[in-house]
Length: 185
Image (cartoon, rainbow, N blue to C red; front, side):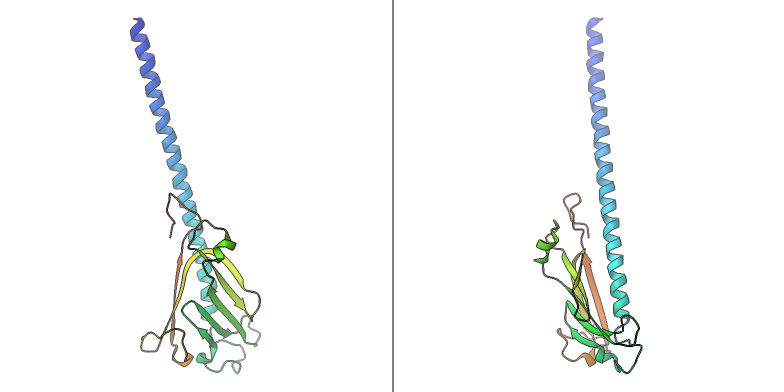
């Protein structure tokens, strides 16, 4: 009877150890899933915020309360490059035309950012040649394409803004922090 009791105790200890390992693994997996989910939500919120700012500004290209300030839409474009655009608009709807510039910074800005992701960059918005305001929202790519009225693409930088009929904006974002050894896009 003594041997049977010792075997029962050892078996119980092994089963309890396995159950404990299973519980710890489930806890670790739940924590990892929560972290990945929260990181994805933050990244999605960053993208939505950025797109709202860009849409607000781009929707107003060439608009001025005093229409004599910007007579034609083609007069609104000051610079049209593949990752840098500058245009006239009326930011605060006071009848005075303002200049807005959107561009993406170099990868070397990441040293200033101090984010672990080597590919993310600051995206900048400048109003009236003021101080550039840069946001670290995980942007890895900010690409602009310009099209004529017949949907043929213009070469950048665009030298004749009269030909711009449509602007296509392409933005890629990644999380500044790693989740499960991958960058979430």
